[in-house]
Length: 460
Image 1 (cartoon, helix red, strand yellow):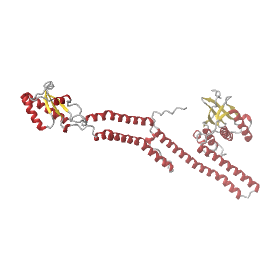
Image 2: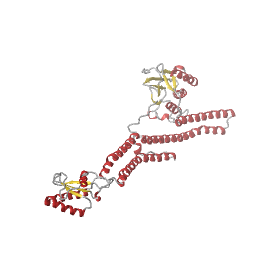
Image 3: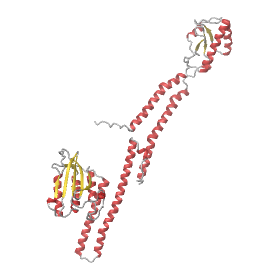
Image 4: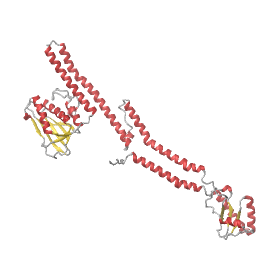
């Protein structure tokens, strides 16, 4: 079973994973840390309650120190008018400091007394009992009272629960959605607008520069759309130029046909002229359609291992028959065992076009040489003639359709052979370019080597 592809370092997967993991960890922290803290704070006495009850303890201590048991009794009497709950003042051994001893029930209250810093729950059946040491120290005594109802903590109320478990997570989820929208949905919307513009034939539309600069999948998609738009612009421009050139090229044979029809020549001569011009137009249309098919359809050509020398000999035999050249004018200077990988018919047609072009522009005593050498995983071949050559500035222009140079090259043909050859070789994973050779034009080919081909480095 094939392993799943690991996302790249800049993949959206990691960005989304980090955002979601951070969101989940933040929710867990809110639930177990901040939420618990808020819940606990709801069960503690407020600062106001602590201040008031602490003041009661100071008053009780002052009453005991100034008046003893009588002072404590008087202070408790005044406090019963202020607070409705039970209270008493005891010493360090939990004995009453007043003149009235504690009952068994009151002693039981002392057993369950809480401190000011202890939590208190409203879910208890009775109000809790609070023990507050004297400011002078717990050994001096303490005030014990039943917590007034107004100071009872509200606990973890519904409002607090709604905030900690509802509102805050909802706000975080909303922020996550905003983040995802800004980082994903909005760029997708811009890509959709770009795609709609291309659909509406606005081939000049380009993706947002900031989006194309991203290193994740959305940036790759934006660059792919831009590349597609550029290819479409190239295709449309190529087709328009091809139609203009084709219409221009067809005017010449059509004009000759019209002149021949209007001229007082015999029927046999007229038939011969018509057949010749029709053949020219058929060849022109066929070559143009083949070039358009190669450059626009970009077919996937089946590749195979090809022995170069037998193919060259077959092409030379046909070329000799047509041109009437002697065999010694075709020189094969490629190392033995040269086998390339490509499409047999496509490679044969490309070499035939190059060979015909070299024959057409070679002098009467000129030779054509095919050389090559092994370079890495491929073969570098070159075809050189003894013709007048091509100016340096025109070496790339000769591969454009319907390109004819000055009188240095004759005006025979339509200027499609080199274009077709380059397109065909590109479909096979090869390259084609030209430079100035020792005598004339040198056309270079680079093709993948066939499997098992001997690795040679010998130059011709």
